[in-house]
Image (tube, rainbow, N blue to C red; front, side, top):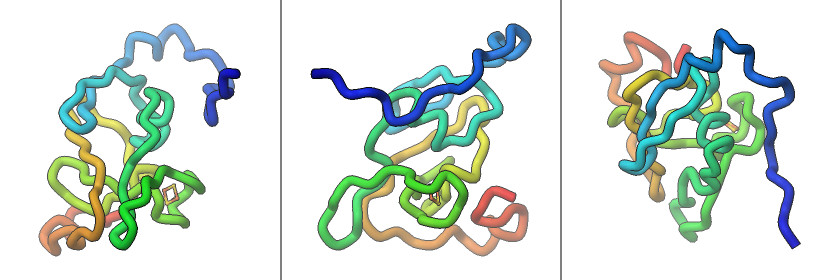
Length: 119
Ligand code: FES
């Protein structure tokens, strides 16, 4: 018995967007994903199922709400820990790592340019 994918693209990608592929890296593995998606959506569509591990038990976690409410999608993006991947858009060359256990908050200098929510 095969399981159905949890998420799927609802509409086909428009031809103009089909060429708009960016390369991101997740745990040092390259992934080619369509631009304009959130990091969480791109990783889920690429088959990533484990985004972080809980600080206490180490249980695997993955995005749940996809709208910034649950914090299950935390990853390290370009060296900045605790980013909500559902609120950050993919960018060519972006380096993403799963977050293992507790992590520091993003540095204050980072939050002056952009909030931790990517806005
Ligand atoms: S998936 Fe819930 S905050 Fe990102």
